[in-house]
Image: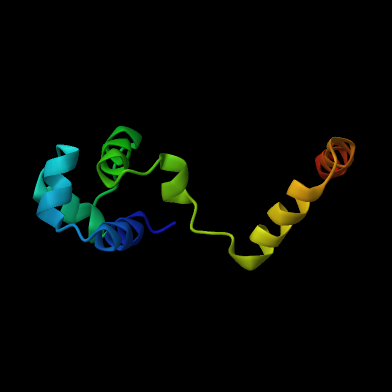
Length: 95
């Protein structure tokens, strides 16, 4: 995953400048720029601070969206009975 590119996209989606995100996360603006330009890699702790500042979870950060297929699967699963869900789960565990 392109962590720097993902940070840029999420930051811009929020309408934050590099300076604002850095301040909210408690990291230096220059360090954030280094991450966004792929010259540095953040630690998990730093990434967690950035995610908190963006008001997202680490899971959301790494979830780039599953698209229509994933949404369709989730819709179908929600309509299943508990017994059908257990059967599906048992099947998926065999893969």
